[in-house]
Image (tube, rainbow, N blue to C red; front, side):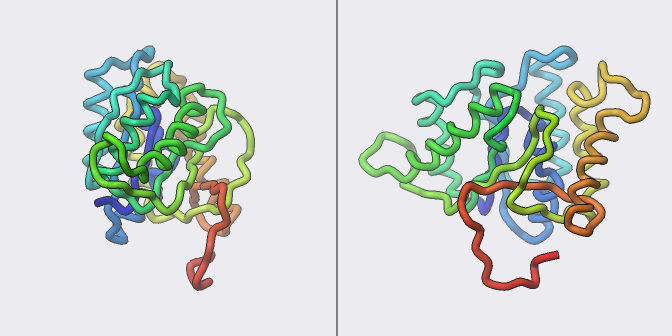
Length: 229
């Protein structure tokens, strides 16, 4: 059983959007898994073999409890009934308390398709009288992380302080060399510089060094205030 299941359209999206939060929650003892929906290929400098090696290296550095790939088709991701059933089956078997998936507004069609797929699979996962594997399970919440291709300033529901884990997140992102380094200008600011600057901006919004933004469609309840920064 997992506390958190992060659903990622492609290998690297989870790390880009919430790698720091994953590291911090693992340090706090939570059980965390990542489900990549596709293998992310084809890309200009990648291959299925390269992407698998990069993902394995990043996973080792994350130290998470579980990772798998749903085997859907990159560039053609759809919130189809077949995909919904596959994803609902994984949710029933891993039984997470919380789901994380991409924010619903993006320029990347796979990211846009992932959001309704996750939301529908969450509902299907609780159904009885079905041939889905495992027992019915309904994750308490869906939270949305930002790995968008739109150059817009997000309006998150909350920003999570990842200051102490930024350097480790950066090392994990460097595992995805075919996507974030090769074929890209190495003149400053590089893509990794831009990612750092974005994390610094979100840290600034909450008075810390680095942060990661998250959204929620539902109100977020609190029982105490000492977790606020």
